[in-house]
Image (cartoon, rainbow, N blue to C red; front, top):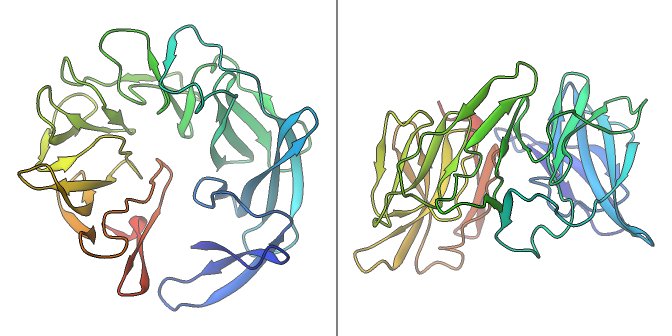
Amino acid sequence: MLIQTGSTKALLLASYDLRTGEVKELVHLATRLKNPFTDIAVGSATIVWRTTRNESAGQVTDIWTAPITGGEATLRASTPSGGPVDDPELLTSSSALVSTDSFEGLSVAGDNIYWSTTNAGLWRLPLTGDTPPAPVPETAGYHLLSYPWIGKPDLFGRPKREAPAPVFGKLLNVETGETRTAAVPPDTQSWTCGLTRCMGPLPGDKDGITQSRDGSAQRSLPSMDTASATIAQDRFSVLRMHGKDRKALAVVLVDLQTGETGLVGHRDTPTGLARHTLTHHSDLYSYSLNNKLIVIDLRAIH
């Protein structure tokens, strides 16, 4: 587990062993990460992270690397943010959320760093930084889900049609050209998908269900609200659970494959109904309990 620690004058990334509690300093940072859960990635024996700064021409994203064993931070590239979203096929849910060509989905695969932006699609940068970032051809309008899979629409955009498509309803493998289109029930809204699973409410029913992308293996999620939820590791989601009066009672971590749930917050506690954000890349989930921070390693659940 990687953590960001230190004051504004002395920031660093450190590893934290979930079994032993051992903390090891890895690399010092010049700038604090805005969101350590989305602005950092690990792969190919390398830590990759991004920071942002404001220039006279607009916001600039800096991409850094360091060895996974620790060492000096190296700036690999600096890339400006783009302009307003310009995709006639998308109806944005909030112009404020997607008013710029946003950076998302930082990941490492092989010898390259990948991310996506709203207009250009998938970007690629060598880990060595020998050449500048370049858009991957024929990926405009797609967003990085889990390399080599990219998809659309993303969380903030929907095709302009009466029945909105599920988030990541259409997938493309940039290495093989394979495509996958989710088969969700008709007349449904607010659905989201991962690589193999989707979830959302049935028409007229506020409770959620989950199923495979092809529509099979449907499983009920009774008394659970799937609105604005995401699927992490193609398997887990954190949902609010409600009673008969629709009043939220608890927050649960749900295994979409097995249907098993675990309580991660409940009413009458200081942070009981706070649902922390999961992304498709999340491998950890944390919550407060009895003045302690409980960390769940999603990768360790078999």
